[in-house]
Figure 1 (cartoon, rainbow, N blue to C red):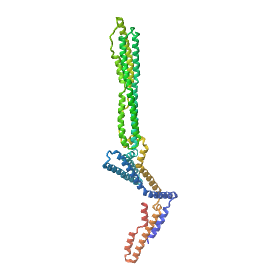
Figure 2 (cartoon, rainbow, N blue to C red):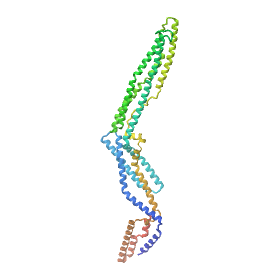
Figure 3 (cartoon, one colour):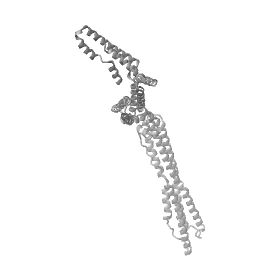
Figure 4 (cartoon, rainbow, N blue to C red):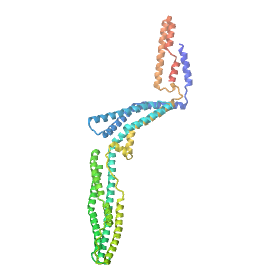
Length: 458
């Protein structure tokens, strides 16, 4: 037939032009091996992606449940719907990326898809990863918040006690000044100050101020047990708060008890600050020199009264000096930095895991990795597809065909030959329709060369 020479010529031409070098043959073989690996991996990729999406949805459900105040059926349905939407979105998004990113060849399309993948990853982190982190480390983050609050309260309690105890130490200064006036009054009684012995005007003035300072000292000393009791109570509350931080049980219930103890401790700290006697000492020091009731001079003669007045003036100057000293000591206590106002603010597990993210880096890494791990698979597929295309570059289609593909091609050629032979037999049996049959054969039997050219183009 007329097609047999053309077939032989085509086979001769293609055989002479399709010879591959050794390196090209190795590249083609490598491309076939990679295709076989991808075919096997395609069988498990969808399942693996589905497992990752479901796992992320489960942790998302737990994270959403911790944010919802209501525990009724509607809240459960809402959390379940959100988690299912997240799972479906993750599965569909990464399925798109795994199919499209490795398939594109132009740089513009590749950059566009990579930017889309980056945007989608940010969206996944925003809608799922932080909730996963809340499910993984939410309880631990809330406990961290409780521990930080305990530390703040302890610092405030110790600072308040330090300021109050500094105020209590002013009792020694008051006692020293009071003893000074007692000594002066005794000297006056023996006539060593004004030169006139007895309990006259000067003696009464010194005793007056001595009694005032003694009363102040007694008031300061009487508050020491109250200060110690308040500090002990605060430490006891802190111990209970520490126990709530680490004990077993749901962290939400412990947070409620912790909040009650925090209120009690805040009251104790306020009480400690109010027990400070520094303002009292400062006012007493101001009154020590300002409110002096000068007794009537009771000297028998003018010289005696003049001596008493001179002594009283000296006493006034001494009073002013000691008053300034007490006022300065009290001011140093008042100028001490007060404890920082500490208030316990309950936080949810999701808020806590964001607030203390630096302390839970592994949990955040796991929460993000379970959502973005398919991105690594996308890159692996893109690199593998690029290697396959590079291995096939420059090779004809028949050189890259597998044994199964060659068998299928041979079977197709045999079917074509069988059809041609049958057509020839029909034409021989009906000579009068030879011309018409020849046109039918030409229409039904395309040239083998055209088939090979089309296969190479594909």
